[in-house]
Image (tube, rainbow, N blue to C red; front, side, top):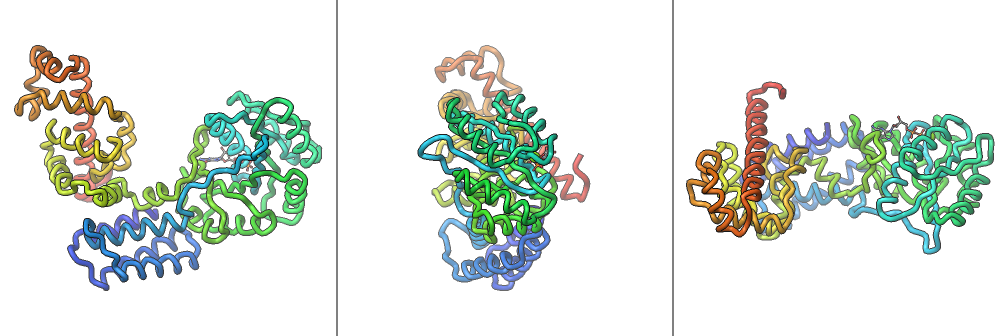
Length: 440
Ligand code: GDP
Ligand code: MG
């Protein structure tokens, strides 16, 4: 995939202290091929590579970044910019209800996404009404009703063979009368873009004047999805795009091209079939995901905030050699204080970036202070090998010394243990991969 290709490219650069022009050219050539293979529009790729070349050659050097990190940072910035920079939210009507019309081809995910969006925005305090306006496929009405039922969100319907415009109007009235401040209308699609569909939707939008027209496209279809977006946008002047099935085996091309080609932002991403699998789309996070920069990028960013990368490198080496102790854990924690959540810090350790289990290790600020106190109350041998030397009386002494409890000491030890286990797992995975073996 795209991520693997790009990561491979940068890995080659990483070993180098200085980058020659030939190094940069070779890397950019590989970036270009990776993007084209990911089904990114060729014109987008061309402009993108040109911008990176300009910036990389211009060398706005950063004191705390080496040349390779510098190139990676430029690529990251440009990828983020390509996808629109910041997250775009939906417009909320000054006078409720906010009306959102979901449009798109059959199978793109309109009905599912309508329900997911209701679910997501309800969590943000909205009172949604779902509207079944796909009058061509009776099963679609039933489908939306089932989803609405699961969410306990009401679904407005007046049956099949009705005029979708009339349904929309009636729904908005119903919403206003019943205290719904958000109306999400699921419309009918077609197998492909045609004039009948466009006229129907134009008509509906002229009458309803929705606050948002969201086009739902399927990421798995790559450039086709982007072409569909272009066509819809010409007729309907979209407000944004929802990119579905990003969890699938998509090559990433749609995510990277839509904004550049249509000028319209991706506002949400569908990442699974379940009703909570819809996320606000964040270009910077997507770019990180593509570059697989759980490790490098955060490191680079933290370097800019005068973070002690040297210290971190030492810790990383110790992890590799499996010498990770509570002292290292404490050192990490003191970095955490400067930097934010612990999963970020763990994410900086090569290979740990994508670990789902990191979520289990979340520690908040208050807990942090306690952990620090506990470790500081230990003797050096205790920090070195806590499992071996810590007995009940020592734990009581440590709890007392740190103003915590034995339970808290135990909890810390468990966290430390978990962290170590995950690290070991990744170190051995890395070794297997290096030997050319397969992952279990
Ligand atoms: P519609 O014809 O545009 O209304 O499409 P549907 O909402 O009926 O979705 C078509 C299929 O795509 C369904 O099987 C959905 O479960 C599936 N689907 C929609 N969004 C996603 C997504 O983000 N990820 C995955 N894996 N499947 C999705
Ligand atoms: Mg549908």
